[in-house]
Length: 86
Image (cartoon, rainbow, N blue to C red; front, side):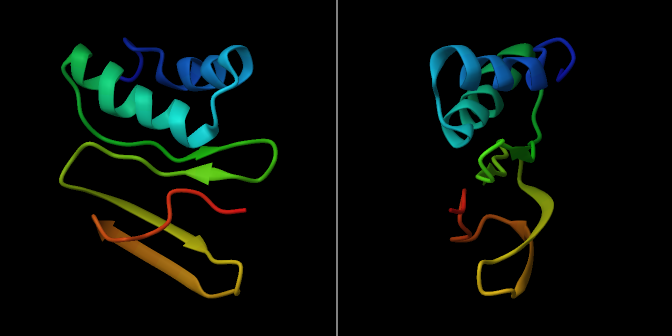
């Protein structure tokens, strides 16, 4: 479904051509485009300015990051984890 929706390309195009933030662009693709194609899952998206987003539309997604305080974090299910830093 990610190939059918051209997920990575669509996220990049929304950032570059529409001026969307990496969070808005990736959330739009993951929460709208992928389900319309019949899929679920998530993405880890990184922008050139260092911001990032890890949206998912499934029950859980393995993901990890190191906070600005240097503390590593690992999550699987929905938590109040940040969607972007910076």
